[in-house]
Length: 463
Ligand SMILES: Nc1ncnc2c1ncn2[C@@H]1O[C@H](COP(=O)(O)OP(=O)(O)OP(=O)(O)O)[C@@H](O)[C@H]1O
Image (tube, rainbow, N blue to C red; front, side, top):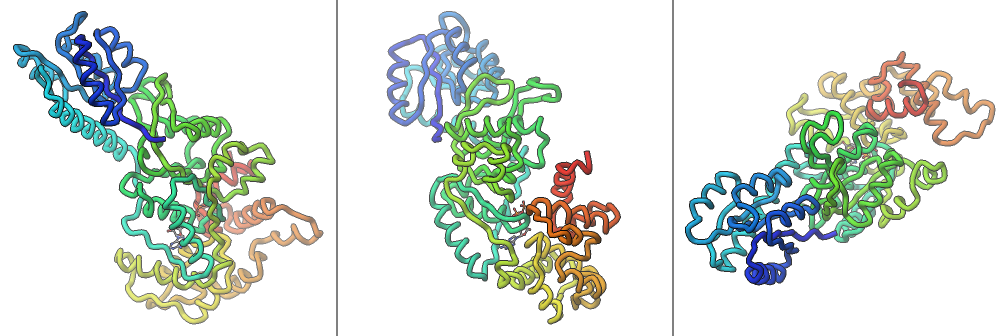
């Protein structure tokens, strides 16, 4: 998927074009040539160009008049003017109109090469800055992953190995286990670490907007597209694109994503030109994609494309050695951020109960519970009831889920239920218990409110 920079030489002197083209091709640039303004403009309408070498005197036009037209067609590209003696004043005028620099003929090829190189660096910086303004960069400066248990130690070892390759990675695991953290670790340990790691949450973007979020759009390409927008795939150029909750990607977008993954090429919405980027793909899901394929909700060909390497993050209940170190790290972080009272300690019975709890919402639920414990504790000593409410509730929590009124009824007639059905019943019972308060229910379940909404929508409970 490597993208080489493309330069257009727009000059009517064929011999000069040939010399410059030969030199630049040797440096790895892709070169296009045009001898007239008309030819140049027609190329710029169909092909994305990174820089133009533009002669001021053309047989069918003036470079100074052409310059604003070029900039209008492709605002990001850089223009270096070529000028004969006596037209230097025009060249200075061109710089006022937005040209990057000018060179006088006869050209010194080394100088020309350096000028173009600088122009292309500027263009890249401009693109990155636009990207940064548009993306909420959620990368943490120092990535601390707690891994005391044997399964997590093994997973981190695998993560390090996977990071050294450029293969697509699929991270699987229940909600809140730390899939996003592992994705960030892959990026940070890879050779792409000083380029962006851009997250895309397929479940959080409305279906009608996903394509333009991913691939960008041109001004006026649809109602509401008031300005040109660079898509997330372009922002991730040379870095990593993290496709979170890939299982929730609508089928219509899955086709477009597959095409992009196969060749690294895409089109902005409302643009006919093909663009190319070099990105590494890391995807994550808490769904069983094989099941999704069987039910026709996920494309098999996309699954095989994404599934270059698979990492499975185990649920917290299968790696209990991580529970207390995670709590310690959470408390330490909050102290560092000076959010709360300094010395919080877990009473021995609190530790005991945490170690025996099953955490359906995994690490995210653990952190929510500790946060609640901190707020309700007196003098920084976190008791079980600060975390789980009164002791009666605590006992109920540990007896599976009979705190959720009516939940156990679904098992009483020995019905055989899929995990999805059990989850649905549990969620609805929890919602009933908290009298429909969705943020409280999400908190109890250890999932985000957004995630809860999506699940309720899929049950047809909310619109
Ligand atoms: N091993 C770990 N060490 C430290 N913090 C962790 C670890 N695992 C998860 N966390 C923290 O738990 C929270 C949830 O993790 P994360 O968002 O990565 O989970 P996820 O599996 O991507 O969840 P979802 O499926 O809901 O998107 C985050 O605050 C994350 O920093």
